Image 1 (cartoon, helix red, strand yellow):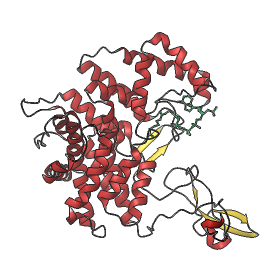
Image 2: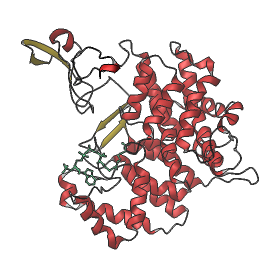
Image 3: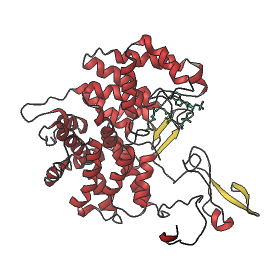
Image 4: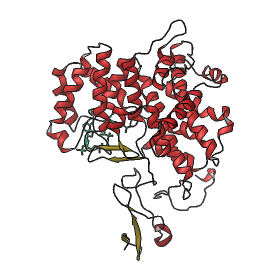
Length: 427
Ligand code: CMC
């Protein structure tokens, strides 16, 4: 017998089918609820709503598990590479050697931007936030690459996906170069994905740029850790935009706009600022006390998560990466000691234990990115660069789904009921 949920509402009793995934909570399929009962469900923050079916990423927040196509994030970060993870997210399975070399070749050959886009950058003010530039330039890609905007053609969808993944480091590095007034550095296809990005960001035409292998590895790992995170706000934005049939470049630009918000992509900057403000381990108790004080709005930035009620598995890898970067660059920054000790104190504090507040991916990432040399405005840009593959994979999955419909939520209306228009002379 198939599982079902009994719902009684408006004097009607219906049985809604209950569907099970391969793992994770069951879902009550309420698609026919309105037709059968005249009632909607109400879940504004999607606290109990699965917005789609997906086979890409799985999160168990209670256990602190993150899987891409079944593979644990820790194993991917340790043993795989960002481009291999991209292939996995786009294609269900890990690539064979041959498949991977073809994929790497394709991505590498798409790294250059249409030259006219360089002119497009010059339309922005020098002090524009690089995320504003990212929204504009990525949205504008649809004006430059018409031949990959027919979303009904799987081949064009594939080309658009490859273009986006390949060009995003070039676009991000150019946004940075423009903001510091340095010349754009063209991609160097002899380098790895991460190495190329580092060169385009920190290299200058006047000098040879030598990629530091430890930083290249750290960068690649940071990209892996941000590659996808199931139906978060920006991914849901991309899906919603794409559900209307909008072209992929416009959809990814929508995702970037959503990611920009401080509650989503901007928390690593806040965590770094907090650690710098604390400045010395002696001051940690004062900040922990503030975080626990109901009358103080201060929160420990980089702690807590809507889904993870356990250690965010990405934070574990970030902590290790932080050590590697500091060792490679011989950095002796007190912020590292503050972060380690703050984490330990919070993890042993009854308030954080009871509320299940653990470090999230943002706790350490800002410190690492700053050590590598990125200004804080670039942190969210790096997140967008890495998340592009997740957005693209989720967008492709949605478009390929035969049951796909335009996303069109309903509402609980609380405004005035119908009334007659009053001419302005009588108001
Ligand atoms: N420091 C102190 N107390 C906290 C914190 C924190 N960082 N986070 C949550 N709490 C408390 C909160 O005061 C509340 O207490 P009470 O039940 O007594 O009112 C309880 O824990 C639950 O918090 P919530 O805000 O209802 O939980 P949420 O799931 O809506 O919020 C969160 C999750 C990430 C917004 C929140 O934990 C937070 O503000 N953390 C700091 C910002 C941060 O690190 N954000 C990065 C998120 S991960 C990156 C991403 O997904 O983009």
